[in-house]
Length: 286
Ligand code: SAM
Image (cartoon, rainbow, N blue to C red; front, side):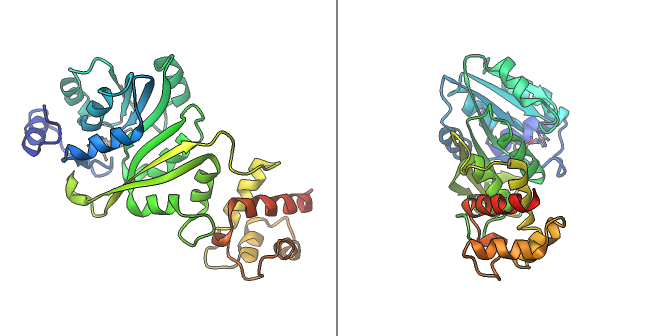
């Protein structure tokens, strides 16, 4: 069955009485070339166990099943389960797990279902919950890599060079653990229904160790997020709002000691800069 053919999809969904849900970010792929390229880019092979988030009716799942040792596809919408039972019937290495990916224990699922395989993630993500899903994937060290389609604007931000105004604290958080790469754009007309914005596929590969050495990770993240708290203000003002326990003069001094201008903004700092700043401010907080 061609799971990207418009008439096939329409007949299949009508037969199962399925209606699209906007709140579940349901935009299904209708060009077979796109799931093929995403699956190819994921690097899935016989040695991989692939976690897919949101299989929909299964076009990407089918491509992954033809490459990977096993595919576990987590789908929130129970109305899609009978559809998937039909479309995934030819693929014995696909297991559909009903549920909300944000609530499932992915480490336990991976350990149980991917024994002897390298766990990776590949998905066309629901856009309304992209950030919490990515955060969860980054914080699940069992995944060595993930290849996901997200909104292009978000993709660009996540892959932005450190210290450029395009990025944010989430970009730095991601880049602390992963090496992201922007792969290709996918225009709205490749989906049913068509979303309002262009999408893009990114691939993130886990670093062997975080990008910078920090003594106190939770304080480092506090300083990094604090640096972006008031985006239109200077780094000193933003940090003094985020860290009320540290005198503003000490923050200004630490910034000056790093050789940065007084008017510098958080977005101009790299992970190295935030590591140095949090080390200096950590001594102040002691
Ligand atoms: N993979 C399909 C495709 O490319 O055509 C569908 C992608 S669609 C953008 C997102 C899918 O994620 C939908 O099937 C939706 O029901 C599912 N979904 C939404 N929120 C979810 C969640 N929290 N956990 C698991 N699946 C979710």
